Image (tube, rainbow, N blue to C red; front, top):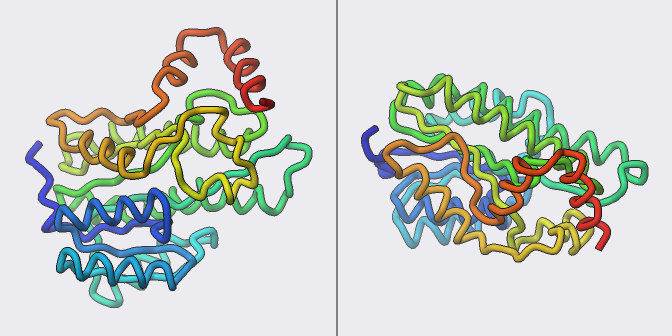
Length: 262
C-alpha cells in the first residue's frame, strides 16, 4: 500500500472532548488531516478545535452530539454532507465503561453503554464504509480494549462490548483488503485518562500500569504506517493478551476475577 497522506484526509474522531479521542485529534492534526470532532461537550470540542486550527492551520468542524441515540452514524453523515463535508477517515473512539458486579449495575446505564460502545460504532462504520473505501487511502480505526481478549468479571458488559469491537473490526479488515482502506482495531490496556472517573472506580485498571494517551495513539498510527498492517494492535499490556491465548479459559477468568477484587 502507498503511504497515507493525511493532508488529503478529513477524519471524524468520536469521543474527541478528552483522553484518547483528543489525542487522536492532536496527532492526526499534526500529520495534516482536517478533522470533524464529535462528542457531547461542546465547550471542550471548541477549545480543542481552536488549539488545533492555530497550531496546524487545518479545518476543524465541531459537532456536539450524543452518539448513543439510534441512527447516530447515518444522521451524522447526512448533517456533514449537507454542509459539504465529506469524510475520508474515521476514528470510532467514543465509549465508556462501568465497574461493578453485574447484579448491582444500573440497567439503563448498561443499555447506554451497549448503544454507544457497539451500536453507534457499527452504525458509524456502516454509514461511512462506502465513502471511506471510495476515497482509497483513508483509515477506519475502532478503539477496542485489552479487556476484549478475555472475560472481565466486574466489568462483564464493558469487556463484552470490546470483544465485539475487536471481532467486528478484524472481520472488516479482511473484507477491506485490496481496497486501499486501512482498518485497525486498537486494543489499549489501562490508560491515564478520565475513563476511571466515568467508570466510578480507580481500581478498574486491574492493577496494571497506565499508559499515556500519547503513547497509545503513537503506536496505533505507527501500526497503520506499516507496509502490511495487522487487523489489530495491542498498544500496552501485551502479556495479558498472550496469557488469554495460552491458559485454559477457566483459569483466565478466575485470574481476572481475583485481579478485579483487589
